[in-house]
Length: 438
Ligand code: GDP
Ligand code: GDP
Image 1 (spheres, rainbow, N blue to C red):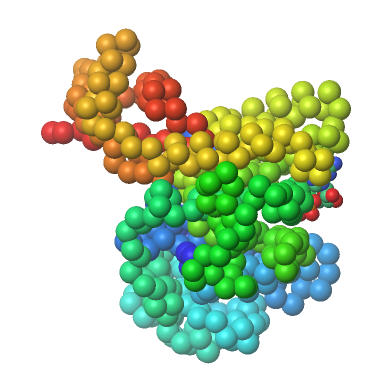
Image 2 (tube, rainbow, N blue to C red):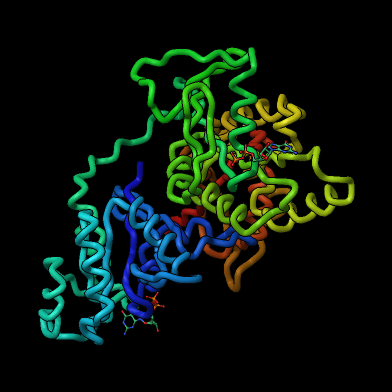
């Protein structure tokens, strides 16, 4: 599980600026996808080998008692409770405020690893003016400048240090040997528990014992038509005896962690609600994590012909960045349309772990170029020479050549289409990287 870092602090100290810095490494990967809306409060980042999840808690009012502030405080407290480490951001220029004292009191009670960070410290003399922050009783204060990217690497290192994270192993589980790890994601009430319990109640599903799984393990192993699966407890779902039950709170952190641990994510959309912002955010996380995905629009029984048409259109426009995924219209309650979902899950997994040989990739690349050559960029015409597979889960295709920085996005999409078709890559993101040799 990736560690979770929560940013807290009063408004205007620079939390969102810092959040953007901390999640930037991932930004580059998803930048290509049009229509992807990111969640402003939850993101993922990577430094060195370590990946992490960051939560920006917005304005922090630990003792708010009414209205929207109370709701915000509740959400913030949930986020802080779910975090492994809290980064408390203060304003180096403004000095200590009464609100800072309130927050630090709250954090000290919490007893979690906590890192005190004084932002906006660019151009300030080493140590000057920062001594007053020691009165917050949280120990050392780290001077950073989120706007200028100063001290941010140290911040991540210091924040993760108390967690004693093991060196991440190279992911060798491509799912070929083990079971397909499946996460069912979706908003509260989308029908996740109904679907899972319908499935687990089916006779064709055989629960089996896996070595090392205990009774309160967070995953359920089962087998269907000879294929082994492992169902991962998802956000808002917990196993209670033999059935899954929705728990009261929806947790974005748990959703993210389930998506990260899965090989394939089944994203359930509630047909009676349409595609909401929360759906797009979850879809964005799936894409960002590079997971294989299958879309299922649930409660299809509860909508009429007109609504169905509207819904199909809104999915096409709002989730256009997932158009590589197969889509099903199902009713978990009436057990309609469920068979093909399995087929797509297996297919998506196969696509995500597909092996593509260098000769075949290169032949496809050269054929594509012959069919339609890339446009000139100024004086240069990109020269695409050969391609090889740079990774799996999701598949990465690395193209080598010269002047590749002039290859347009349109042309990349054209190539992507050719590769997808040839290798039948349905249900998995595909990344294309360009390596120009000098
Ligand atoms: P938040 O309310 O805590 O999320 O704060 P924001 O990230 O929105 O930043 C508030 C203001 O502080 C903005 O005007 C930022 O441009 C500015 N700011 C953020 N980081 C820095 C910094 O490192 N140095 C300076 N001088 N200003 C910063
Ligand atoms: P979860 O929060 O995603 O686990 O959602 P639940 O499985 O608890 O379902 C929420 C509500 O939607 C319950 O009242 C279910 O009976 C209902 N529901 C689930 N699937 C369907 C369906 O296919 N059709 C209809 N009409 N209702 C459904």
